[in-house]
Length: 162
Image 1: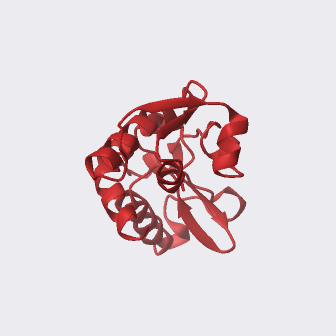
Image 2: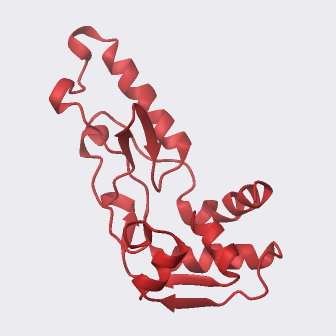
């Protein structure tokens, strides 16, 4: 959605100072919505590793070392980022791919961002932080590229569907 908003606007942007945090040792990386798991700011390979680890624990006697039921809510985590950094990386990648005429990033208000997407104040201005303490206790660690390292590949794929 962020990439599409930048392409539609024809210029990169961040909401206000772009200092809000997602990802990292504090970012919520998945949540349950309509019966499916959705990833936020973490590589799908790391989420897959977490799911496999939990499935393996679940097959052990008494559910292994994992917690289940009301206590069985898990977070995964990757390297923390600020949305301003994402705005710069996405804009540069779009410029490099020829989708934008400039690699510059504007700072816009929440009101202007909401014109780009009705959830902009939550998606691109909010903070999303948590920790994967329970997964770490089971031996899980994120290993895949972080979101900033993945931006060029994500942009190339996104442009194919636009």
